[in-house]
Length: 190
Length: 190
DNA sequence: GATTCGGTCTTTACAAAGTAAAGTCCGTGG
DNA sequence: CCACGGACTTTACTTTGTAAAGACCGAATC
Image 1 (tube, rainbow over the protein chains, first blue to last red):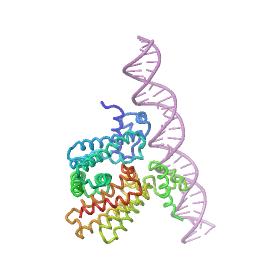
Image 2: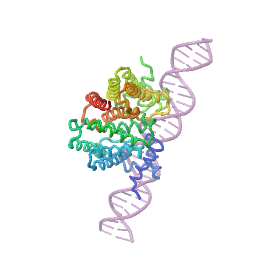
Image 3: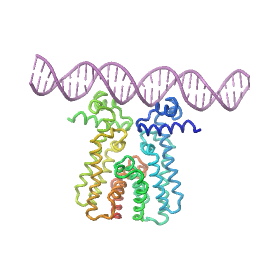
Image 4: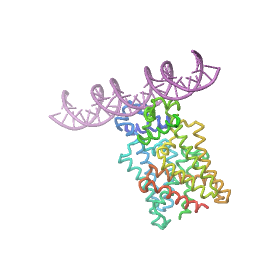
């Protein structure tokens, strides 16, 4: 038996899937969870508070994936695994992915949200820093490296999920394609 | 003297700047334009209709920039110019940039919106296709090339404007940095 | 065992906002 | 002079977010 707050966040997922992000209503979320329309407000204060919690959970899941990837010894495989985790999350939790970067829906000054986002970011930064320490692309600025690698990953995934790249490819191909592109990029950056 | 529909779209820009995208209200937009709260509905049917027009105009401006860049003969400079136009738009019209990818705010099935987005996309695709025809990176799949180049550009800009990269750099450095990164990428793709 | 207390969730109430419908004003063509 | 149509407003209704108070219930306390 899951607790009510989690139940409400899951209800948000289903509402987004059914009615889109702008179709999220405290009343709908309450009904979807089998509760009253003020239940979500009780736990999360208000609608932005609900979104904040939802987005924080999403980032947290992404950060978990990235940090797991950061455990891999070989920096190159580590980076590829992080990218794969990012893409997999976007495909598996499309509703969450389309909302988690929309910070205007949330209370930006929430420490938990910041922490979750930074955990994801520093995970990637750490992988690349370690790679540089290993001598790979050592002549490059760390921030340039981050921007190039993570920019490519985020950009491709974002264009794929709801962007103009959604048409030419289908979902199943995102992960292998991204791996191929990033692999190639890393080859050339070394 | 600009016409009323344009006046209303400009009002949207100011409202977003002042109250964020979720602060956009037909009533506020009307007041901002010195009109009643139903004026926007009169021209654009409803709120999604208003957003559709706003987002379409934004894409249209981006597409103009990309198509202008596509005029440049040298494919490499052409691509760099397109990226620069994209980044410049994001910096100059941040309100628009933060909203134009949020298609859930709009009526997705509007032909004008599709056309504007495709114009931007095909602009980039055309540049890279021409580059390949010139023998540059000719052994590569066109879609891979698009995904890599445009993924990098979109990813870096998106992470910069409101993303985790906003902190380490400031706005003024986005265009030169992006140019440097893309320039380097193009070097290595050739 | 009765009582208080804190937490969970609902009921009620109200203001803000989206939208439909009808109405007003006004320039243009016949 | 008058019908017509477009531009915009007024009015009215519904949905939604949010505040406030209350009902229910299990655990701690006397």
